[in-house]
Every structure is written in C-alpha cells, then in structure tokens.
Image (cartoon, rainbow over all chains, first blue to last red; front, side, top):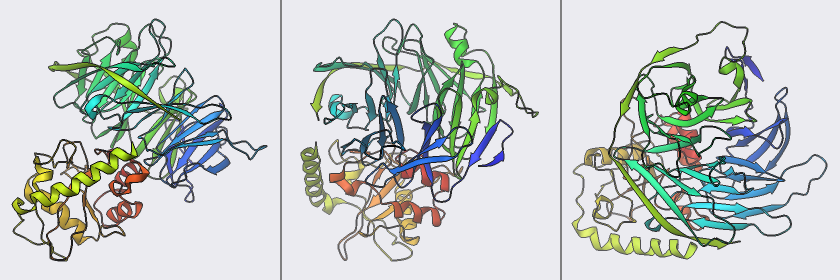
Length: 358
Length: 166
C-alpha cells in the first residue's frame, strides 16, 4: 500500500500482479482483483492486504469482469467466461465451469444469474447450479445489429427485473430478464446518429422504475427514467469534460464519469434528475480529479476502486463525494453548464429467440 | 455457434480471391521491408455485411500509414501478421473500422503478393472471441510491442488488451 491521496484514497502497487479489474469481493471484508494474466486475488478491505489467489482464467488472458452471486464467482476474459465457487482458505476444492466464448465483462443480477455481454454474439445468461453443469441462455437480436458491450441489472419496485445494455452504435437496449423456460424475449433499443454508447449504470436501488444513465464515448450523457418503456431520453453534454469516456457509475445520488483524462464527479446530478429537475438546462457542480485510469468499479457501496496504469487506487466513497471530511483541504468543484441536445431518435422493438445450452 | 464461425472463415477467403484483380495498390512501399499494400474491395464496402470494413473517414494514405508504422516498428505476432493503430492529434486512438475497431490486422501475404488489412479489434464482427477463432484476437505480445514502439500508451495497452475501447 502506498501514498495517501487527498481524496481519501490509497494506492496498491504490486509488480507481480498487474491488475486489470478491481471491485466487489466475496464478502464485505474483501475486494476481488483480477490480473492481466488471468489470476483472481482476494484483498482485505481493511489494510489492503492480499489474501487468497488462484488462476481463474485458463486462457491466462486479462480479466475484464468479475461478479459474485451466492456461492459463485464468475470471471470473464476476451476468451472465456469461467464460473467458480468462491475460494476458501479451509477448502481448496472449488467447483468450476467454463463457457468457451469471451465477453466484455460479467455482472450478477438479483435473480441469481450471471449476465455477460458478448459483442455481436449477444448476451449470455448463466445460471450456476451446485454439482451440475451450468445452464446458459443466449440472447441475440437477429442480424447482430446490436453490439453488446456493457450490461447492468435493474431491480425496480414496479417493473420486472430488467437488463439495460450499452450497445455501441446500437444505442441503449433493454429487456426484461426472461422467465425460466421462456423461448423468446423482446429487446427494445434507442439510439441517434453519432451516439456510441460505451457504458450504462442504474440510477439507484429500489426505484419505482428501471432508471438508467448511459454514456457515449464522446461523453454524451443519456438519462432514461424507465429504460423499458421510454423511447427517448434526456441528452446532455458538458463541454468542459474531456477525454474518452470509459466508465459511468452512480453512487448516492451522484454521477461519476471516468474518462481517459480524469474522474469527474457530477454532484447530485442523478438525484436532481430523479426529482424531476431540468438537469439539461441548469449548471451542475462538478469535481475533476485528473488521473490516468483504465477502469473503475464500486465495491460494497462503500469504496471506489480505480485501476490505474500503476495499480489500484482505493477511494472511500463518502470522502470522495464530500460526505465525510478528509482532513485535507480540497476543491469542492466547479460549476459546469450542460449543452442540451435534441437528437432525432431511432427506436426498434424486436422479439428474439432464446437459445438454451449447458 | 462454433460451426457458424468456421463457415464465415471459409467464405471470407473465397471472396478475397475473387476481388483481388480489382484491388488498387498504394503507390508507395513500406519504409522498412518495402512491402506493397493493396486496398481490397472486400474491406471497403464490396464484401458481405459480415466483412470488417475500413471507416469511411479514413483516407487511403492513412490506411497505408497504419500498415507502414506496423512494419516500421515490427508490430507482428508469431504467425507473421502485422497489427496497427492510428492516433489522433490528442493522442487518442481513432476508429479504423465501421464497427468502432481501433486496431487493424494485416494477415501475412504470400511471397511477392501485396499485403492487405482490415480493422479487427477491440470491437469486431465475432468479438470478443471464441477459442475456435483465435485468428481474430491479437496476441498479448502485439500490444506490448505497440507500447514499446510508442504507438499506444500504457493506459491504451491495458484497455485494448482486455477487450475495451481505448
């Protein structure tokens, strides 16, 4: 562990473990770190001490996604998706299953499945089952016109569990999580000329509707109050935000955008949107933290883990968002005015078949 | 799924042969190995919908420069395929293909025949990958050679290597 960061962060560097992914661990006491050569390591949140480690990706490719549900952890690389039972210091036997097709990442959803975006190949829904082979469902819209790049699960109060997807030039796509045994599902998508959606995030837990924000590679932000039903979103862009958009994260009513240049914190932006304020027309307080980052994820709703070119920067979310004092003086941020965009939307609904396998 | 991918590979090779006669060749050769380069119709809109296609805002000189830099910096894998990128004035990687690819692949040409290439990574037609289709995935050494040559930054290398846009 190394130096103190003015935003309440610490940095971990280990030349023998080049990190490609960092985020939620098997329990609140741990993080998972994935390496560029396919290893998965648990790291204690307290003290940032490495704990257990195993070769999670047989291909030894860089881990680009890790997700946990129940007793299982799924690991994705560009070559495969592997599902393991969580490592244990008292039992070195781990259950294991492999899907021989790569993904851009993997997430766990409330119904206990793993979901992996596989580019033009579609979405893979994986149901881990103790002692038996994994059940896999593949969802792909005909023609492969959607490029499934990122996915997020949305558990809202008044709608069925929903998947929202960043599908690059295909825009934002949404579907209800298929019921067991379902043979088809409807995928709806919305986009406009020039939009290249690279990430999408939920606007919060326990909302009445599946609300999301998506980001284009050029940092265009698109908000949907109900991604299952809305056919056009609120579109805005902050000209003072620079770089190529990498990740978009919503935390405690704030929006965090990681670009190739900086981490931007849009204070209260998602809260304002959900309260019905015209966020596309009013200035927002934005805090910029310059960094050369590769990826970022929340962990246990308490930490922000940023993979940098050197290691992993661990931020206490409350300190980062200014909810708790850091003991250091730092800028609260600057006021950025948005540009409101009114693009011509193109939308499409399509029934697609679900292919099952094991 | 594997069977489908094998069929696509077979179809691709057949199309290249048919279009080879009408593919223009760049007037210059590469600086280091003096390779000729041809612009195949297949990867400029003349192929089928599944064929990777160079971006329309990319000039032919720019396309050639991607290959030339790959040759000049020895950015090739063990199979002799070259891989290239193109940075904009801000140092960010440009899109090379119509599917937002940022890396181009130049498969090894038979002796004496011109080289050709197509956009292939990190987003591509069959990406991220399938083990039965290794040829669509640049090897790790390719990204390391790009970084050493200064064609990409460490950050961009780490992004591309795991299948993310840079």
